[in-house]
Image (tube, rainbow, N blue to C red; front, side, top):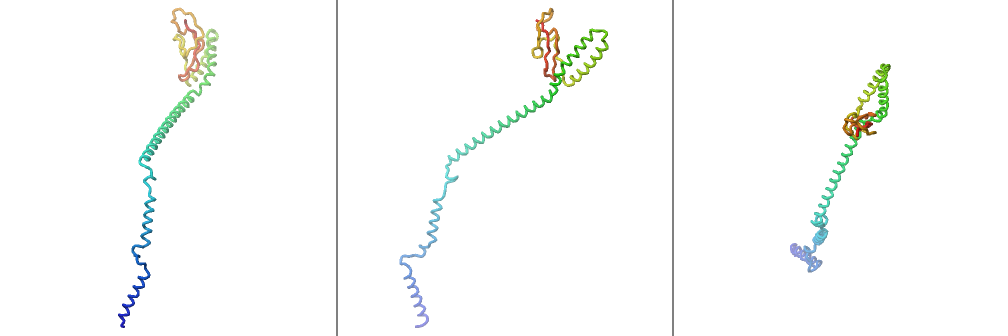
Length: 210
């Protein structure tokens, strides 16, 4: 037996041993573990898939959007109302502050008005005495200076004598008969009224024709 015959004999023996080891119906291509694992993995992936937006339907999403839009509109409306209220508060506060500054001297001037009244009375008494002419002129000068200071602060006299009675700036203390005088006309002023920068701080005390 030569070398070639020995080689053929060995190949036949190896093939026979391999066939005895494998089952008769086995197929190496069909029983690869990779194919089975891949199929199970694909199946698991398909079972774990969810619909878009976590399974919510189109109608659910639409309702959610509409609700958010409504909430947004309500918040915008609320913020606009708050802004409008704040603007009104700021304007009101600014106006009150300006008015407070404008009439800061009102209390002082009101307290000084009786002093002004006494000056007028003193002038009236001195006017009736001829020997007191120098006294009258001195008091009159003080009165004018004092009134000028108050006038510079915005003090104004309320016109009364001969004017129609106005309850907004006149205080009637007496009704009198007066010939040739229209009814409800101020015929006498007992005490002057005053305005401070257009605001009435004291009405005039007057007698009115009836």
